[in-house]
Length: 222
Ligand SMILES: O=C(CO)[C@@H](O)[C@H](O)COP(=O)(O)O
Ligand SMILES: [Fe+2]
Picture 1: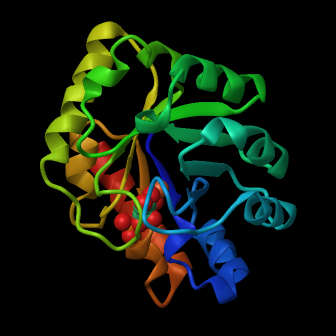
Picture 2: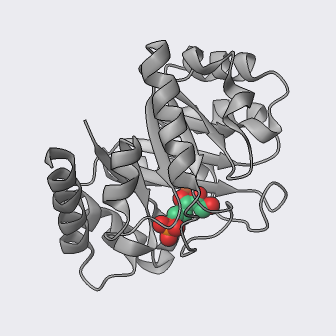
């Protein structure tokens, strides 16, 4: 089952409600919320208040990607705000299984993200605990960057491990995904696709989301 979860980082924040309504109209399977603290990544974006406000207007799956140094301190706040899934970066976790457990005890899906340079081996003994593994396909911090081509091998390696060991976590990819490379990342094994600028920078967001999803589903059937 492939899913399209657009990132709202590239939205015009003045018109965010409109953008999210359009994404829903276009058939998006959720909203990806990029949370940045100016420490883990060199940018500052949004927080739990944003999640709460969005959730109070629209019932869409909220996939919260925490690019912050101290995620344990904010899980509760994002959970109360209406997050459905929380992703934390392996690079900042001192006790990953404890963090996953806290997320799950809040009734949410728990995901672990890896930066492009972080090897899959850091997850060797904890993969079974995650509902989803997010492979960053750009260095986190900004929308609109170029996909890093060597990440295709990393996705394929993760898919091989998943199949060989019988795990059923989702494989999410995030960064630089476009109509042109989405089939390649899906063929490598990704099944949850995050894309920001490729959809949000289009004049008709609903149409762009619908086209993107149609293109994905066509790729999944090929
Ligand atoms: O987490 C991030 C960036 O750090 C992403 O979610 C981006 O916001 C995706 O945007 P595009 O690369 O698709 O424009
Ligand atoms: Fe993200």
